[in-house]
Length: 316
Length: 218
Image 1: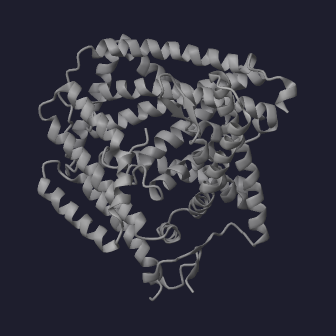
Image 2 (image 1 turned 30 degrees about the vertical axis):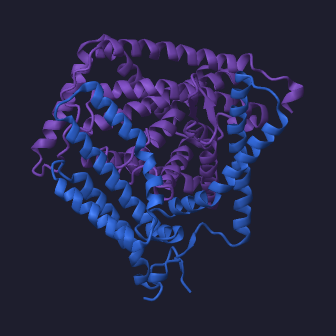
Image 3 (image 1 turned 45 degrees about the vertical axis):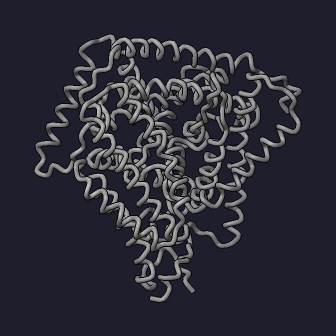
């Protein structure tokens, strides 16, 4: 999901940057106001902590493993603005120090991983948390938010690749979602376990009103928008008109792009004339897997909150 | 002395010009690469030549560049894999073009970041108008990345030394604890760092050293 340069076209890079960078600027402004001189050390050291947390490998089936992205956890502890800034800084350091991830694609990466993955994930967490009570509600909300934020970020990434013309949208979306069902599961379980641990050690950090956040109405709207996006993409294979509608809008965008005086974008889609056998069937399986996965995440969150309750003598 | 407070731009403009120019020219190069028509293989060869000359001139090792390039490997595999599945006719040259763009872009960024020390890079970013808080946060993140990673390694080794069990479920729970612990310790450390910075006169204004030798003469 972490895009290098060269995969997305200039218009997409410009558009994602135009969305993501002002949000990042606003987040910085908010934090400067809320934390003052404390802002830089707290965000910087926590960004380093996210780096280290990304070294933890969670074993997944068949010898593979996934790692925590940590965006949601950072947002839970530092608030949505803090999560956005911390993830943006992680991305910037990865790009400019470790040479991993694009500089031109920075806006797209910030949009996917920081704004959607961290800030958006937080809105889902905060909204769902209100539905449940106490520890169980909190942990189930964290698990579901981790799951949905990873899926939403993957969808955004696939759409960006599709709009760039590097890959066609539908197979990209399929491939991205197939992979990120696993990654989302890892993120969901890891975040839920980390929140459980925080409940045992520092429950005060998880107080609902601790971090300065968005107004409830905005939070709910953002969470609803993200959930609707994910659900719509997963339900799309069953409603035959919706994928076509998406392709129609893509064609409109492409035409609008072609009508510009300067045809700067000269990408040719390598897979333009794709004919993958069984694509529709795969899509339907995927949407079932998405539904089942949501149930599994809910169940795991519930189990983590309930039955993994540690022995109080050992918890100390 | 090459100390330069980030906030004041009055002191010797020329000193900060070179890092800024480098960053800007790298960004322009990236834009050109992104806008490059996929058919122009001669352009590609010319770009490779230019980058190779820059690489030689900067005296950077090729092995390091190759090691950085490994990052692109999964993307290249996915591109080739999807080509095999789809059996598209015109796809191969277009896919090669995408790979070429990825390589050129990575090479450009690598040249940019390996040609100057990190403080100089941060100085350049600050003088390009990046928010001060962002640059200061980035500087502190860079400073504490290795500290946090060492902490993780210590925790992992301590667990290895003390815990004799290989149950999957418990493993997962430990990983969750690790993540939580890392965050809690980061929060605590950030408080200590903040106190120490205040003790040394921190007022929210980052001072960065421009360490680039070639710029200090102007």
